Structure formats: C-alpha cells, structure tokens
Length: 328
Image (cartoon, rainbow, N blue to C red):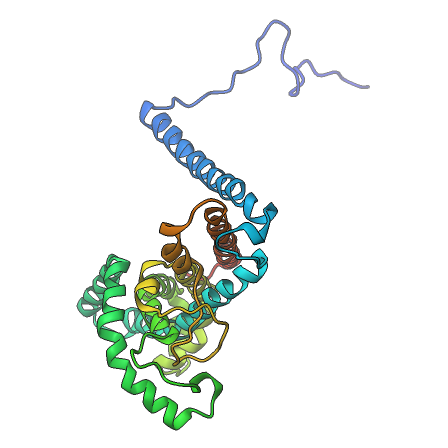
C-alpha cells in the first residue's frame, strides 16, 4: 500500500514563506575607492593609447594624400621610398644591439641568481637596476665623446683582418661614429631591463626541479641547462622583445652618436650609416614646416605600429608561458 509523505518537497518552500535572501558582503570604503581608482587607471591608459593613435593617424594624412613634389621633405619621392631606409636603420641598429645585449644579460642574470653569494647578488642587482635610471642623453654623450674614439682603432683592425667579410668592409670611419657604435650604446641601454626580467624568471624556477637534477648527478651548469633554461625560455624571449622595443624607440643616444647619411647598407664600420626613425625626427623636426611636419609624424606612426607589434608579441609569449606550472 503506497504511503504519502507529509514532509514538504525539498525543492519548494511552504506557502507564505519568503525565499532566503543572498547575503551580500559589506564592502569597505577603502576597497571601493581602490577598485574604482584601479579601474580608472586602466581606462585612462586605454584612452591615452587611442588618443595617441588617432592623433598620429590624423596628422599623418597629408603625408599620404598630398603631392610629394610639393612636400619640403619628400622632394618628389613617395612616402614609402622615404621611410624605407629609416625603417631599415631602426631595425638594423636594434637587432645589432639585441645580439650584443642578450648573451651578456642572460649571463649576468644567471650569475646573480645561481652563482653569486647572496650579498654580492643583492649589490649587483641594485647596480643593474640603477643603470636603467641613467638618462639617454648621458649615454649619448658617453658614446659620442668617449666610446667612439676608443673603438675606432679596433674598427681599423677589424677592417684590416676581416675586411673580406661584407659587414667589416669599406672605408673605416675616422671618427668611429658608426652604426656599430650606436648599437653598442643601445645594447648598454637595454641591458638593465633584459637582465632584470631574466633574473626574476630564473629565480622562479621550481626548486624541486633544480634539486632533482642535482640529485641525479648533474653539475650546476648541467642543472641550469636541464631545469632553468627550459622553464625560463619564454621569459628570456619576452625580455629580449621588450629590450628590442626599447631600442626601436631610442632617440637621443642614437642622434648624438650616429653620423647619419640615410643609406641602406650592412657595412658597420664606414661613415655611410643608416638613419633611424627617432633620430631622423629629432634632427629634422625643428626645421620642418607645412606638410613636412606631417611626413615626420607619419614616420612616427610607422614607429608606433612597429613598437606596438614588438610589445604585443612579447606579451603573447609571456601569456603562453604563464600557463606552465611546476612544483614549487
């Protein structure tokens, strides 16, 4: 015989009773203020980025739509023909700086994180961070006055002994103010940021991974190759990309060091050097007028897009490596 239960259904409430209200946590005024400030700061960054993009695009339109023959800077050539040597010089000098800075930055970061005593590592880390605070004008003065004269005899030796290599061929500059000197200065300038990022990534390597490699009989260097470098590969690449972005946008140091001529050449030791976009803007903007200003702003737009692409690539690499998790 079937029996009926007198208990109310668990999925329903008796008639006349209100549904339970969700408890809302009390938000303190400090939390509300902080979240609002953080949201406002994020929106401000986006607004500034959009405003800069709109300004560059709007002010660059006359360079794209105007008559090149009437432009005081283009002088009858198209904008693409004008900006191509500048793009080449910007990328070429930045790549040279990256090639020189990357091994040094990784070596310093490894020494600080895994070899140096704790006190020495703290001092070296502080010195590296302090190097990032040196103004670019100081680097430019050092490169143009001190470094150029020091490396000029070395350039002569390279030309005499390795002149059969196209990079070291041609007539050596008598002043030493070449694209290679500018690249050395850029390498010194991007060294702090690359070293700092690489050091932090190396320190985040799971300790159990390092101890497991050492327990299997690996030396310290073998442990770094097997455990540290694979874990930090994405961080090292992102550090290199951020350093490249810094080198692409550097203005005063290159302007003060490089003896520009606007040529497209791979020779590193001659007085015929490519010109970078920032240096070209700094040199020609004071005397520009009319549509010539639009041409310089258009080159700035090209540099903006190039730098934005490099930084976006670095962020994409960082986000990919963020999915990796190891034992801590």
